[in-house]
Image 1 (cartoon, rainbow, N blue to C red):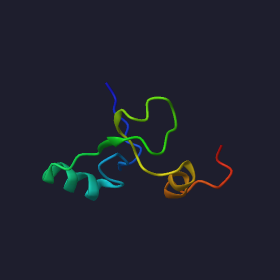
Image 2: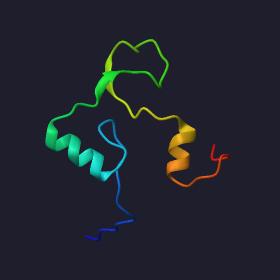
Image 3: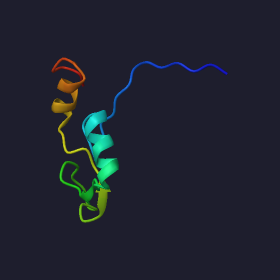
Length: 68
């Protein structure tokens, strides 16, 4: 079995990087809330959502504006 590691990092509903996510895990912070970024008929349901736009995520990843 082979394992390849391309990098490390995390973007999640409890943190936008490793340090934030680790702190949230240590303090028991929740990333669960009602949806604000995705629009749909189930917005009243609790979800774990990254509260960033596609453009903001692309910028964090170093992608150009024409990523789509």
